[in-house]
Length: 113
Length: 113
Image 1: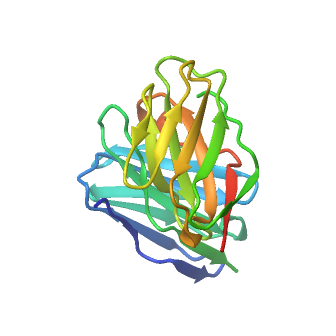
Image 2: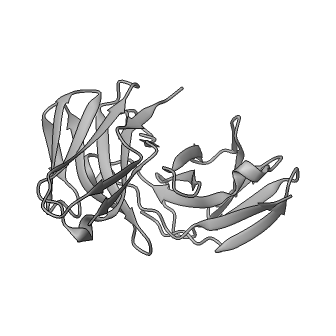
């Protein structure tokens, strides 16, 4: 059974704090994604990684960075949290197989005060 | 990726089949039809996908019309836990960050007791 886990379901942080969101998958997938989901805006891709230490910017990378030191783990870092980063953060992974179905974690709901 | 059109909401009685339609009249030959669902405050869950043929798995069946311009997701015996927003996505496999998923507004399926 496929499994993507995220370190926290809910987080409350203060403006200016550095925030780490962790994602782990146990499917040996090459690709991993970080999205944020906001009402009325749907899913927006923040960063994508296709291999260890490899990353590509998505549509909204500003204010975020990522780290992929091991294949199974993909971290999203908010360098200095701001209130407009309050959102639901979703991690997903997929294999390089032809159809590349993406499997999602449960999400982290982040509130920045 | 081709655009999809889904009804904004549907009701279904518990124990009955739920049939969720999706129109994708501009679909091209190499685009797959994917279905995901999202239960409130959780991450999206992959359900099923197909290219041309009808598909069935333990969760649902996917019926794709012969001209591929529309499809129907069937949940054979809906339960209260199937209440969720269901997203129909049409996409072609591509590499890199362009492999992002784009969710439309989906169909809110409300299963009634």
